[in-house]
Every structure is written in structure tokens, then in C-alpha cells.
Length: 118
Image: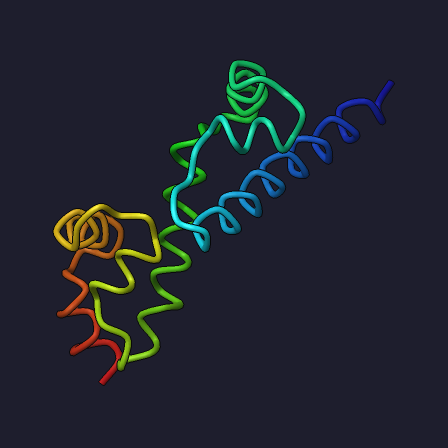
């Protein structure tokens, strides 16, 4: 009986990591959608939502986490324009990316590059 919670924890970690991986793949292709990710996992959108909720996560939270990590990685290349980074992360406009980046890091992408990556 004591092994059941452990097995459940491993399954949960696996689901969220699989969802994050699928989000990363979809970001490289352009648009990310919960329907497509759920379909790739052979479940409905509702089931995916319910299983992530059990972990205390949401699809939107995982998407934001993946975008943040990739943004920080992309920002290392100082030659890559911010507009291109925003596009690669699936933001509709540079301003939307800038607002998200400022929320994540407390500074604008341009300031981050000039201060942290100098």
C-alpha cells in the first residue's frame, strides 16, 4: 500500500514532463494548442485538464514555464532579434512577449540583454 502513492507521483511527473515536451515541439512548429497535446496523449482535453489539476498544474502554467525557459535560452544569442524570439515562442506580437518576459524576470527583454548578458 505504501508503494501506491510513490507510483502515482512518478506517473504525475511523467504526465507533466510529457506535456511540457509536447508543448516544446509544438512551439517549434508555430502554434500551441491544448487540443493537439491532449490528442497526442490519446485523451480528451477534459481528461488532460483533470489529470493536470490533480498535480496542481494547468496547461497554461506548463505553457508559460516552457516559454520562460526557452526565452531565457534564446536570449543568450544576442544576435537573435527580440521579434524573432517572440515569434518562436508563439506570441502574436513583440509587446505580448515583452509583457510576459517582464512578468517572469522583472525587467524588459531589452534591459535583460543589456544588463545581464553584457
